[in-house]
Amino acid sequence: MWWLLIPGAGIVFLLVILIRSSRERKMLENTCYEVPVRDLPEELSDTELLFLTDLHDEEFGEDNLKLLKALQEYPADAVLIGGDMLTVKENHSGDMRALRAVLEAFSGKLPVYYGLGNHETRMRENPEDYPGWYERFLALIREYNVILLDDSSAYLTKNGRSIRISGFTLDRKYYRKGHTEKLDVSAVTSALGPSRDMPEIVLLHSPMYGETLSAWGADLVLSGHFHGGTVRLPLLGGVMTPQLQFFSPLAKGRKEYGDTTEIVSGGLGTHSIRIRFMNKPDIVRVRLVRKEDK
Image (cartoon, rainbow, N blue to C red; front, side, top):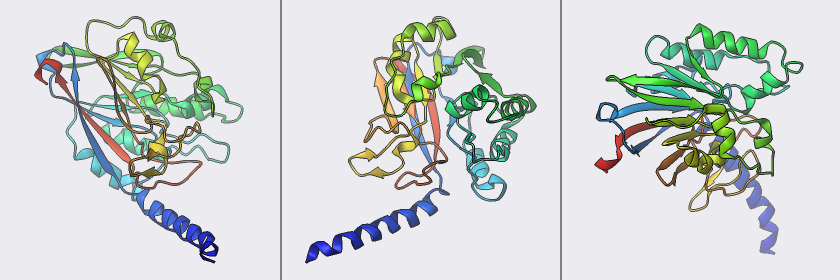
């Protein structure tokens, strides 16, 4: 009759996950990566970047003070944002308070570069469902002098040398659940132009196209979107992505495509599935080094 215990054990296991998740969603961890870049000028070696993505309106402590305090502990030359800092769904109010707190914390201190995720593009493309949301978002971007990278590029200059930072905005067809859309290098070139003879960093919200960006000429690709796989299990990794891939190796971590490194953040927040298990909210730190020094 031991099999009669299985439903009860399942319920207990689920309760353990929910209780731990409610705590874990408010914890923070920082993941550090050292990324070798080919032909990185000596003047740019040891450039430090903070990468934030998928906040989804999450707040850590009153007025987000816990998150802001954690961010201020890490010296950086720039802040890169990978998108989905807001939750854009019909049952949400469009409150941008959490995003405002983050942008305000860096205002006048560090340059902030912002690439778009599927939630930002959703409110732009469906103004009838989210009236005035994108306009308020743009006003916030302008208020804090954030560099918005929407199929465009800007430069981070240090010691007289520059890194090109680009944001490639994926069409919503690339986010369909249970479906993988092919991305051609020509689409990237059409949006950003050809890669140049300088370090190239690309903000690409979905991690599924790192190989395409490598073929284009990116040195570093920064992605999110998969929320670390929601629930992470030892040896198996992330269980499920928002696009219904299971145990995807792209859920979180580091991938190499030739001379290109892709860093996938586990993100900071949640939205539809409000669970994080063995998957703390993720602040990513990246240090660029010269490849020949490795």
